[in-house]
Length: 73
Image 1 (cartoon, rainbow, N blue to C red):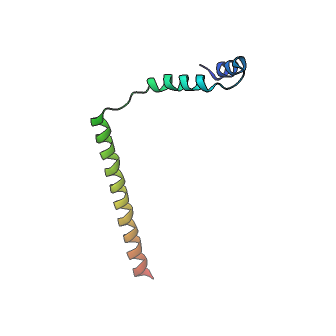
Image 2: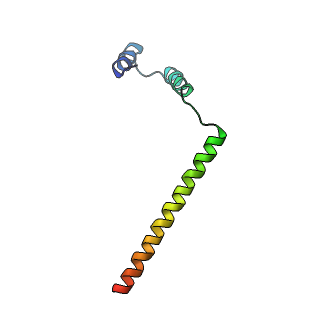
């Protein structure tokens, strides 16, 4: 559906319809491809590792700059 069709449907229906909204929401959720358990665990571990690596790198750079500032001042 295009936005123009959506507007026309709302006008024809007399406004917002909660039942129609819930039906369309369910139709859209049925189109979603959900990951399986193994994929979800693997990608979650990857994200956690990247966050830990990024935080460690930022911490090390911060300590380096703090040490340099201490030497200069």
